[in-house]
Image (cartoon, rainbow, N blue to C red; front, side, top):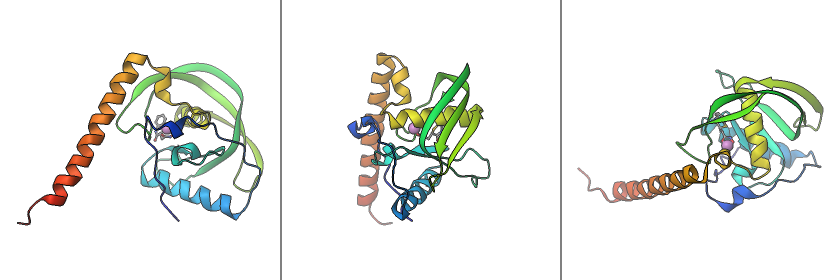
Length: 179
Ligand code: GNR
Ligand code: NI
């Protein structure tokens, strides 16, 4: 198992459109295990392959409190949407950024599982929001795209500043004198 690197906004690779999965082999299953490991290590409730620079239509999710209910959706399609509701969203590619967004309240999804078996499911609440959020990643779309250009500009500046402080921080720790 390998923990993968999660790309961060505004990395242009987050804008690539993922292609359908056609081959269900051991390499795909290994990749899914790595994606799940990466999601759990980052305490995320979902992760799309796009976020680790693999541009295939694969998403993993786990919205359970016990973190032991992994869900794998390959080539997911939304069959129907109903209602709409606000929710607070975050994204592992935008660390520390949260904002309110309107999404469909209930969705019906068709997808393939890790061995290529087709299934359908209904989703609402956090799971429904997450599936819509992850499916956007496969299209190269991020939740901040729904916000105003002004808000996005603030977010870009805040992330840049935090990244600068993060690297300055590890630098000063590296050079701190021993006590
Ligand atoms: O961990 C995550 N939490 C979350 C909370 C509300 C709405 C969407 C999400 S997805 C996010 C993980 C992530 O970035 N997936 O792409
Ligand atoms: Ni995300």
